[in-house]
Length: 244
Image 1: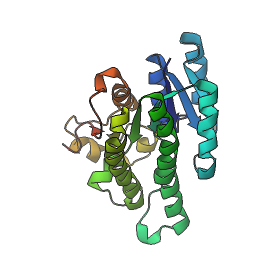
Image 2 (image 1 turned 180 degrees about the vertical axis):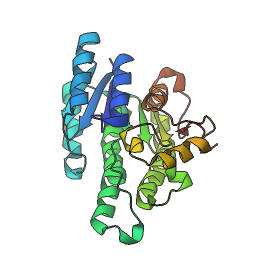
Image 3 (image 1 turned 120 degrees about the horizontal axis):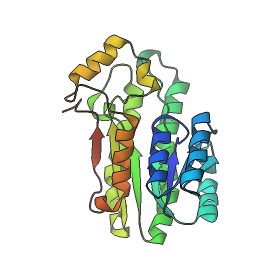
Image 4 (image 1 turned 90 degrees about the horizontal axis):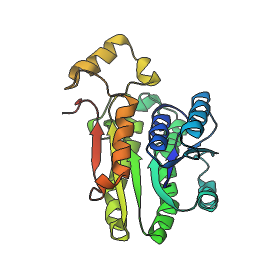
């Protein structure tokens, strides 16, 4: 059973990814600060249907200095890490001119610094084990921009640059590195948008709707699978044609 580490795996998109991977025959290891009720249900379902396919590890990814210890513990408990999905992120919105510096620092720490440091330690073991897959969850705002999300967009744009360059660094060691860039996904967060804002996004999309969590999870599953063995350094956009 191939081990895939998914950060931010307790809710939203991360939970959708771990559910799909567990059903697809991977051992999905959800990393999050705490176990949510939906994750608890998913763990029970997975244990019933595919024993051992879904595990939870409590860890605060803002604790950068503890990341090497986390990776050592994961390898010791589960063995080689085949896949890493860097999904965890915080999403404060707000006009840059009014945003507290502490919030800017938190966004950069959790969305950019943490996944880079985690990847550094995981990719070392992947190279030693003869290969692996890394999927970074970016966002369409990393290349389109969106008013009120300038710092968030900066963190996501940096993840895209990181993906492309790292793919060149580690490709010869058998590690594929790609990004998935969701658009506005049909989640609790977008349900909080005003009806008018949501309709405007849907109207602007080629498919006249928002993509669902499972649409993004399917893209992640594809990039981890054997069918994507010759794909690396790329960004797969899942936005129902919003940026088409």
